[in-house]
Structures are given as structure tokens and as C-alpha cells.
Amino acid sequence: MKEVLSQYIASAMSVTANARFTFVDKVRAHIEILDPVTWISVFPCLAGGVMASGAMQPTLHDYLLLLALFLMFGPLGTGFSQSINDYFDLELDRVNEPTRPIPSGRLSEKEAMINSIVVFSLALGIGLFLGLYIGGTRGLIITSSISAALVLSYIYSAPPLKLKKNILTSAPAVGFSYSFITWFSANALFSEIRPEVVWMAGLNFFMAIALIILNDFKSAKGDEEGGLKSLTVMIGAKNTFLVSFFIIDMIFIVFAWLEYSWGLYPLVFFMIGGLLLNIFFQWKLYSDPKGGISFLKATVEDGFGNAIGQSDVAEHKAFLQFQVANNILFLVNNLMAAGAIGLKYLNG
Image 1 (cartoon, rainbow, N blue to C red):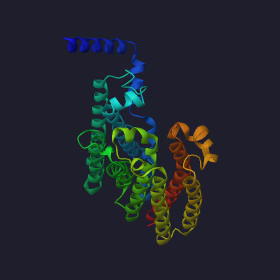
Image 2 (image 1 turned 60 degrees about the vertical axis):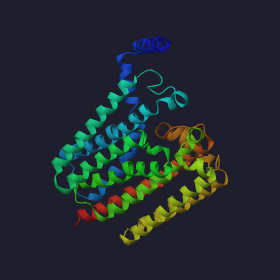
Image 3 (image 1 turned 90 degrees about the vertical axis):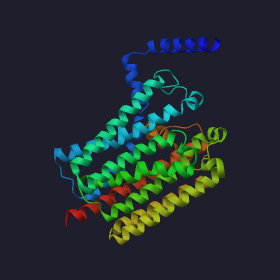
Image 4 (image 1 turned 180 degrees about the vertical axis):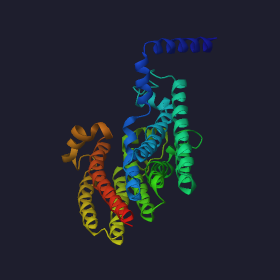
């Protein structure tokens, strides 16, 4: 009897809470649960893949194809990964992020699940359309890529697999979905897969892993209490910096070697210069994980804060500062190399 009464009261409170929210509030909550800030994370890889093809034409047709690809991987694909994560992390968010749409009552669990189903269906629908429209192996690459990304997004957050529980499964899953298949899909949209794109996709995959490792600083305390095996929990902050920095530096070195082998000699010097600058930042951070590069704090607090977020965890705040510098150096090299590769194929 007490249990029935408790369920009735909880249900009544939920109805009352939902009645406080207008239609506009609901729309905002549905958009917020898709986490728009994360949508832009796939764009550099999509842009790089398209540029490296050397085959996109400045026509309405090709721009619409690119828009469809961005919607598929950005607001819909990435949005699904965020919304389904919020759905399965409800109990954790009640404690850590009570202002999120579900724990705050702005969305019910049923509404959140409907949100996830809608964006999942739209992303898969666009993937099927593009696959059929492009046809052949290129179309199959696009359709299979978004299908794999959606499946990984689900098992990343959902039990029993819940890949996010262990850094050895979570980091590769995110790197594959955000930075690997996006290069291939964007390239396949306009041309056969360029050999250079295989390398570029691999480099971006490992860069994503290195940054995801450091991003776990923000939830290290909660991960430890919840039994999640992030690298920070397992080996500590300084050693985590060391592992991530080693991966990042190897990526820069391999990238420089590839640019040399592709004949992109001016970019080699730019890449080496970026590596040296990165090593300086890394040394400062390893010496002082909580404030080693505090001279870059303005880039986060006054510059890119709305795009990459803020943090109250000292090590994570330092990572965000490093992330801005590292990403600018790496992404500029990505786009310049992709443009040079595309020009090579454009000129025959």
C-alpha cells in the first residue's frame, strides 16, 4: 500500500512539474539534451575528408550533399549519442548534473527516449538515402559508417556492455565514431577513398583517444566512486598526462613524416614547429598538472569557453587550456594537408 501511494505521489509531482514548462521550454530541453556544442566536433573531419577528395564542385547539389552529411553525423548522430547517454546516466546526473533536462524535470524519461528514437531514425534514414544515392562501394561506406556509429553510441552508454565503464573500450569507441569514419564518409561522398585519407583518418582516431583520456579528469572523483575505470583513476593525473602526451607527440611525428613522403615540404616545417610548441606546453603541464599553463586560461574563460566548456577540476581546467592550443595546431595542419591532397587529385 505504501509503495502504491509513493508511486502515485511521484507521478502526481511529475505531472505538476511538467505543467510548469511551456512548449518553448520543452523544445529547448529537447535541443539541450542533444548537446549542440558537441555537433561541431565532427565538422573538421568532415571538412578534411571532403577537401582531400578534390572532387566537390561549388554547386547547390554538392552543398546539399555536404549539408546532409553534416546533419547526419552532427545534430542527429552526435545528438543521439548525447541523448541516449543522458537517458542511461539519469541517476548519476541527479547527483552530478541536476540541471540537465531529465533530472531537472524539463523532460520525462519517456520524452527523452522518444527524442533518442527520432534522431536515431533520422540519422539512419539519411545514411540509407545517401548510400543509395551515391551507390556502389562509396555508398556502402557511408551507410555502414553511420550505422556503426549509432550502434556504438548505444552500447557506449547502455548496459550490459556500457563501453564507457572502461577507458580501453570508451576511448576507441568515441575516436572511431567522431574522427575515423567521418573522414571516410566525407571522402566517399565525392570520390573513391584516397590513400592519404586512410592515414589522416588513423591520425585523427588516435588524437581523439589521447584527448578523451585527458577529458576524464573532469569526472575522476565520480568515476572512482562509481567503479568506472578511467585512466586517471587507474594510474593518476601525472601519468595520464604522460600517456596522452606520448600519443599526441607520436601523431605529430608520423604526420610530419607523411607530409614529407607526400611532397608537402612546407607543411613539414609547420608540423615540426607545432610539435615543439606542444612539447613546451606538455612539459609545463606535467611539471604542474593543476596550473602549468595558466597563462592560456583566457583562451578558455574568455575565448573558447562556450564551445569546449568550463571546469571546476584543476587538472581538467588545465587540459581545456592545452586542448585549445593543441587542437588549433593539429586542425590547421589537417586542413592544409587535406587541401594540398585535394589539389593534387584535382590537377590530375
